[in-house]
Each structure stands twice: as C-alpha cells, then as structure tokens.
Amino acid sequence: MNTTDNLSGVTLFVQLARAGSFVAAARQAGISPSAVSKSLARLEQRLGVRLFQRSTRQLSLTAEGKLFLARSEHILAEMQAAQQELAGHQTPQGKLRLGLPELGQFLLPVLADFAEQHPAITLELDFSDGLADVVGEGFDAVLRIGAPRDSRLAARKLAQFHSCVVASPSYLERHGTPLTPANLQHHACLHYRFRHSGKIEAWHLLREEDAPPLELPLSMVCNNLEARLHFAQRGLGLAWLPHFHVRAALADGSLREVLAPYAVHDHPAHSCWLLWPSGPHLAPKVRALIDFFADAGSFLQSVEK
Image: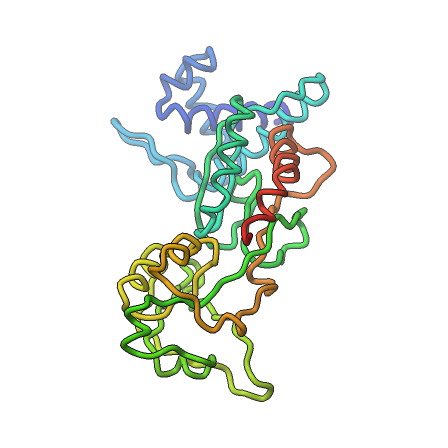
C-alpha cells in the first residue's frame, strides 16, 4: 500500500473518531459506510492494534486508538499548515491546543487578548503540572513553570515571579511571627502537592551555610492554590504562595508577608516558559502565539510589579 493510501486511511480514521459513527463519517467523506469500515480494518491490520471498540450502539476509541488519534491530528494539522504556507495563506486558524500550569491564571488576560486578536483560532486549554509529551499528546505548545528539560523543544522565557510566606493577622497574633526560616518548624504550614509527581513543593528560603534542610510541619496538604489561600486567610497556618496570587490579600490586610528577606526571588523554579516542537516550519497559529507572547512581554514582566 502506498503513502497516499496510508494518509487516506489516517484521514478517514480521524473523521470517524470525530464523527462517532460510520454513517456520519461516510457522509462527510462522500463515500459509503462500508468503505469507511474497510479502510479502518486495513489500518488496524497494518498497525496490528484495535483502534475502536465496536458495538451495535456505540463506537469508542481504545487506549491505542486515543494515542494514535492525538498523533494523527497533529500530523494532519502540520500538513495543513505546510500546505497553507506553500499556498501563501498565512492567516492563523484552526484549533490550537495549549498546555498550561495549574497556577497559570496570571496568563489568562494575555490569552484572552490573543483570542480576541485571532478569532479564527480555537483555543483548547489544558491545565496540568505534568511533564507533557508535547508531540505525543498532540499539544501545539505548552507553558510550564521551571527551567526547560527537553532539548527537543524550542523554548522562550516569558516571565519570572516569586513566592512568599504569608499568614493572617489573627494567626500571627495567636502564634507569633517567625523571624527566621528555622522558626517555621514550630508553626502550622500549609503545603502544595504536585498532581503529577506527588512531590511537596519546596519553600525556597535562604538559610545559614551548613544549616540542615528545613523539615516543615505538614499541617495541611492540597493540590490547589485557592484552598491554601483560603486556609491562610482563615488563620489556619502559613502558606508559600506566588506573590501575584496574594497581591490583593496583602493589599486589603487579610494576609501579611513574613520572612521577606529570606525569600529567593530569582529561583529557576519560579520562571515561566513557552515550549513548542522545534523545527524549521511552524504552523501559522503557533507562530502567531509565539509572536503574541513576545509582544506581551510588558505585561508578563509586570507580573511582580
């Protein structure tokens, strides 16, 4: 079977996955349902896996089918982008799948501006702290916190932010104000657990040379920013939170910052990066996103101001 037939089979597979039935996919492709069924059978035989679970009433993707769909959609999108570039059509359009970190709320105003400027692009936003396989999972680009680790991806640093230790006035009145990081061992500490790795987020605080690592009490652990903010405002303990996330609470006095001289402001873990598959040919929609974030630099650099 030649390359054209292979591509045709992949295209029909994607149409079938999106349509959810042989009849609907056949109508879109302008062929018979039996022709779609035969094409799927040839594709499954060639791959050596079952892509769909079939019943009289339902057609659903298998685990292998979901993986193949993500890769197929990415390949077809790249081909469409290449055709547009060769044909001279540079208008950014189509679905743009973007991965965002859990604390990516500060990026939402920029993304809303991007959506307004590019109405032909449909944003699909996926919030997760997991280390995404950008190509394998069908992402066009991802925004991640922390220095990039995958050399196969192109990267651009967007912003640097810092976190701080905060507590409510009522908590500090009852338990006292910690004056050094070592004092935290005698306080209630509210922690963040990363969803993907299960690790507890470190509090990046300066300590004396040769001092042992801090072992902070686990008074509460969660995987949500708002929960820690709420618990801290209710006087249940101290929390390590992004400064941009608690700026309003600090301004209205419901929280106070402590240990400010010890907070590390330029730690690599507190940098935000845009990552995308490296290569000479970028889809117009991805190029538009990269260029837009470059133009949005003034907003991103003001995150901590």
